[in-house]
Image (tube, rainbow over all chains, first blue to last red; front, top):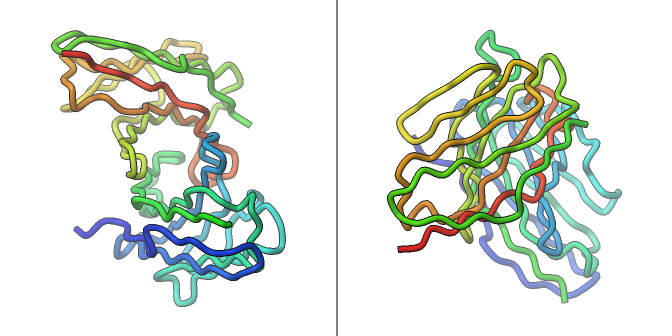
Length: 118
Length: 111
């Protein structure tokens, strides 16, 4: 099966501009997650979709970040307006629904989108 | 939050067995333990997952003691291509916000 695809692989924008990152999960995966690593620090959770619904968005840093997953397929993460501290790598991951084993989800990650804000 | 603690880095030589231990003292009853591997410019990749005792697959083994407050990833006969960052992740993925990756362990395999 095709893996998780993220686009663009690298984006360079100026402070105040808008950037939209896209994630195409594995077909049939209901769960979709966004994570990010900023300033070389640890990978941190941003939010979790189950199909088109936001299950958990407790990791979203502020209202400059907007994630959508229309139709429960691909997802976009928009940063508007971008700030210097938003620079980092944004990862998307997807997984199937649990198959009767709570907690047994296995995430498949994309290669990430590197965002550089100047 | 299920916080994890791992060694920052480890060195090994080709052909050796490598054991990386992760501490997770506040693991919850419903939490699973999952290990991921990450190469530069790639996303993390699943290695192995377990709940208790021992799990083995074609690439690694995972040892979990009875109290589940730690776990050990064992990589048999490592090669240069096993040089990567290894993350221990504890949590229930139906509530992924409760899981964090931590800093990971950078394993360097030398010839």
